[in-house]
Structure formats: structure tokens, C-alpha cells
Amino acid sequence: MKFIQTRGHDENDNTKKEKSSFLEAILDPSASFGGLFAPEDIPKIPDDFIQKHINSSYQELALDIISLFDLGVEEDILKNAIKTYDRFDDKDEATPLKHIDDNLFCLELYHGPTRAFKDMALQPFGELLSAIALKQNQKYLIVVATSGDTGPATIEAFANKENIKIICLYPKGGTSDVQRLQMVSTNAKNVKVLGINGSFDDAQDLVKKNLKDKDFKDLLAKENIKLTAANSVNFARILFQIIYNFYAYIKLIRNNDIRNGYAIDITIPSGNFGNALGTYYAKNMGLHIDRINITSNSNNVLTSLINEGKYDLRSRNIISTNSPAMDILKSSNIERVLYHLYGGSRTKELLENLEKNNYFELNADELKTLQKTFKGYYSDDDYCKKQIKHYFDKGYLLDPHTATCLKAYDTNHNKANIIYSTAEWSKFSTTIINAIEDNKDIDNDLEAIDKLEKEHSLKLNEKIYDVINKEISQNDIVDIDEVSKYIFDFIKK
Ligand SMILES: *Cc1c(COP(=O)(O)O)cnc(C)c1O
Image (tube, rainbow, N blue to C red; front, side, top):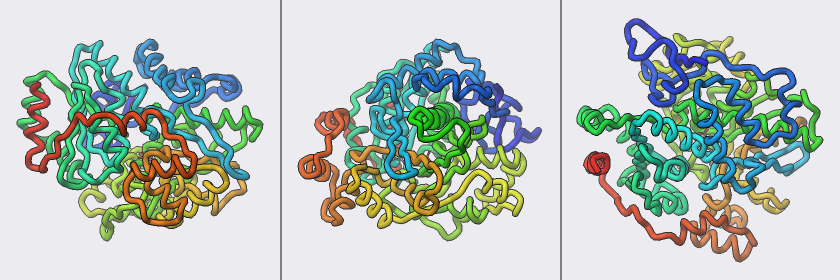
């Protein structure tokens, strides 16, 4: 399988080959003209694929799906990557599926070590990248800016891995308490965590600025370190986010909720569109999905794109919500969908418009094509809190991101719909307690967790318990203009 650049390949740029291998695409994930890599062809599952896997474990299914992509990676390395799912709560079931209402099912994607869906891809990706780095005898550096879930999951995936160094920037005061503790409690020598006096956008800008800086590049060259990325611009992340779509469908058949061939709806709380992109690939590989519902919070730029064909940032500023992992206006993986639907040169045109004018608009035909697959919904914090309370009273606990999915089910509940649950309650306990008790009194996670345990009989996951009680190893809080110095010192060590 070859990988193509989403903004085309042109004589004038030529920074990359016209087609790249999987390894090239994941080790150096930025493509020409600022684009990404996408698979040249989307492989199809054989007709008997679902039937054949009706009793497979998650891991067996994963290996078979990945092998359809023909990645040119040794089977041993892939098998070891997939074996990381053995560390999830239930080794035989990485992603439990719960029946929570008439036609409503919830696929829980948070049973990995950091209690958010990021583990679904970062756990195997950590194993995959370290194996490659060792085999190549090459050192790699990953610099991440995080608003909360990516940081802990990246650290967990790469802590103490040879040949890999991680620098993680988080905005001081911009994450939940638990998310911060997950990062600052790490004592792995290959990980540097820096809190910055600034916002998530500042952290992201710093990462981008550093990556272009000449002194930084010179230092990496001198130390013989290559730079790669672990966010969802890296196709390896997306690859591992295809598997659970198939698993969920097979579970519905196994439980006699649907017959094989029935087309279901899938509903995904979206930010950077990495989770939803995995579903898009699954549908195009032949999985029976009718509609992919994309849900947002008040930062509803994806809703406007899908329902009106307009990506318009001109009058938007980020709104802070109770679902911070979706407080995103520039949704990077939309680019891959545009590429698959409209081709490289149109994608380049649309995204250059966005970069220059903060705006692009699809034509009527393009919009129609997009709407064959996707439908957009959004809801605000009040709606989500009401849904959290409603379902808690019925015996099921949703996190604030997952709660946005209920908007799609409310609107159309005539068909089996699987919503994707992206985080455990423990990461957003302050919102949860205030939703359940219908107040605004509690303002920190530790108090919220205590109350949820004592008064609502919830049980805190052991990993989160450990994090809360662990000594803090990473104390640095730095000003924006000092960050480079800390990064340079860490690289030289
Ligand atoms: C990352 C994240 C999302 C958004 O996923 P995307 O792949 O960026 O669309 C939603 N919910 C939670 C809890 C997350 O951590």
C-alpha cells in the first residue's frame, strides 16, 4: 500500500516523493504544501469477512484488518503492537459495547491506561514506533502540545522506551486536575513535561515555531535525532482507530441485536476528526454503516461544514466548554476526507483558502457527496449536563464529550445507533458531579471524585487513584520565551 499527499504532488514543491511507503508516511508525517498522507486506495474487506470474524477476539480482528493495508511492516512488530490491548481492563474485550436505550448502544473506548480514547491508537502506536526506532537504530523526538488527553496517552505509550524522547507542553490551568496529574507525575527519564504560562493555542504555536527553528533543527542534526509526530496527523493513529468500528458491528450481531448486512448509524463526538476518520475508512472498506453522525459542542464548525458546506472561522473564537477535547476550530483530519472525496488539487485549493482567508465553501455537488456519508449535530453544555443526569438516573454514566452524541439519537432514533464514548467519568468528574446534582458548587476534581465515590457509589479506577497519590516529578512551569531553553537542555541530556 502506498500513501499519497492530500494536497497533491507538484513539480514546484517536490519536498516528498509522489508516493510514500507506510513507514515514510508515519516517520515524517508532513507532506508537500503543508498537507498530510492518506492511503492511495482504501482496501476492501472480503465478502465473508464479518462472518469469518464473528467469534474473533479484538486482537485477532485487529491483525486481519491491518494486514489488508499491506503496510510492509514485519508481522512480529504488528503483533506486538496489537498485544498492547491485552493491558486494557478486559483483555478479551478492549472496547465493551453497552445497550443503553431502545436503539442506542455505547461503545466504550476508554478502557486503556489513561482512561480516554487516545489509548486506542497511542498504545499500539507507542509499541510500533519504538520497535521501528530500535530496528533502525535511530533516535526520535516527539513534541506534543496537549489540552488534556493526548499528553497523558502519549507519555504512557512512550515512557521509558529506548530511542524515543517526548516533550509535552500543557497550558497551566487549561487541563482538568486529573489530566495534569497524569502528566506531572511521570518520572520516566525520556519524558519532559512543561506547563506553560499561556493557552493551549500558545502551546501549539510554540511547537510549530520550534519545529521550524533553525537552531532547533541544527541541534537535532548534531544529536542525530529525527522528529516525528504522535497526534492524529500521523496515519498510524488513524489505522488503529479503524478496528473498533468492525468490532462494534460484530458485537451487535453476536448479541442478536442486528443481522449481518443491516446498516447501522455511528455517532462520534469530534474535535480533530481522527476518531471519525477511522469510521469513514471502515465504511469505505465495506462495513455496513449508513450514516456517520458528527457531534460537536458550541465550537460547531464541523456542523456548519457538513450541513451547509461552509468552513468559516472569520467570526469565531474558541469557546471554553465542558468538553474541552472538542474545543477545536481547525480540525486537521477533515483534510483527508476532502482528499478522498474531491482529490488533491481541490483539497489544496480549499485549505489554502482556509489558511489565507479563514474560510472555504464547497460547491453544491461537493456538499451532496459529503452529506451522503455524514450528518452534523451540536449541543451546548446545558444540554449535555441534562443528558448526563438523565442517563445516570437510568443507570449509565456518560462523560461530557460522549453526551454530545445524544443530540443525534434524539433527532433520529428509528435505527440502531452506536455512540462512541471517548472518556471515563474520572477525567471530568467536576462536570459530572455538577450535572448529577444539578449545581455549580464544586470546582476541583479531587473533591468531585471524593463525592462521587462516597455519595454516588462510583468506583475510581486504580490507575487514576495512583496518579492522584503519586509524587509530582515534573515541576516546571515556564514562560513562553523560556520554553526553547528547556527544550534544548532536555535534548542535549
Ligand atoms: C480527543 C478526544 C475527542 C475528539 O477526538 P478527535 O479524534 O480529535 O475528533 C473527543 N473526546 C475525548 C474525550 C477526547 O480525548
